[in-house]
Length: 74
Image (cartoon, rainbow, N blue to C red; front, side, top):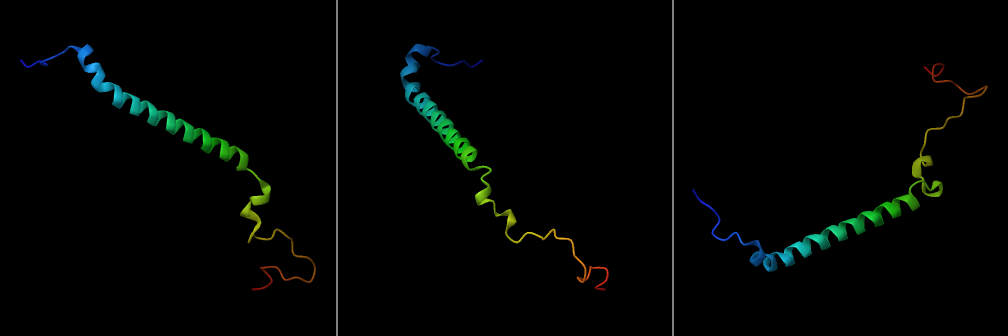
């Protein structure tokens, strides 16, 4: 049966402080980026002045008198 040669975790704590601090820093940075993204999307999400859906859109006008309908054009 094999077991760990040294299971004293108190002596291993100093070796793990730097990687744990790095992981915490990365998580804080990721949450900061997420907050910035959500804030930016909420401020610019539904601004009608920048909506490009109207450019090149299909006209919804009903053909009037004198204008050929698609069935009559055939």
